[in-house]
Each structure stands twice: as structure tokens, then as C-alpha cells.
Image 1 (cartoon, rainbow, N blue to C red):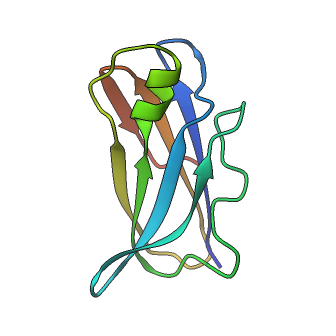
Image 2: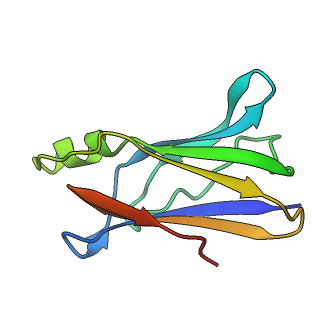
Length: 113
């Protein structure tokens, strides 16, 4: 069974981004269905990303990071109020790590390990 994790680093401050709400959704035939989420901790991570009883199956997923909440808390003007990362799970036995490198006017992501 696949597992998933995320980690957000604020590259403008050089530290983890604490307090970022995020939602994990699975693509269905009718749209998107929330299967997990949370708010990043002091290390910029969500410890339990999947809701109880949910698992990652083969298919498409979307992680939405509510970055406006974080930057408002920092009293910093930003350009991207929400960052959405869409990715595909194609191996039922792999771990999927979706990190986000964040700054007020840009972001990047990659498949981590």
C-alpha cells in the first residue's frame, strides 16, 4: 500500500512553514473527493495526512496548500493564495513525498523521497 507525506519550507525565511492548512483529494469520475489533510506543524509537516480508513490507490491526486493563511499570519504580502499540486500514484507499493518550497511570490515542488 502506498503512503504519502509532505513538507513545506519557507525559502524566504529559511525555515519550515508552520500553520499551513492543506487538503488531499483523490480524483473520482465525478470530480475530487477529500481523503485527508491537516495543518503543518513546527517542522512544516502534517503527521497524519490521510483520514482514518483512507489509502492511496492508483490514480490522480491533488494537494491544495492554503498559503494565504500562512502569509497573513506572517504579515507578509503574497501572490499565490492557494498552491495546488496534482500528481499521479502509479505504484501501489511506493511512498510518495510531495514537498513544497514556498516564498511570497513563487513556489516549486518535486517528487521527494
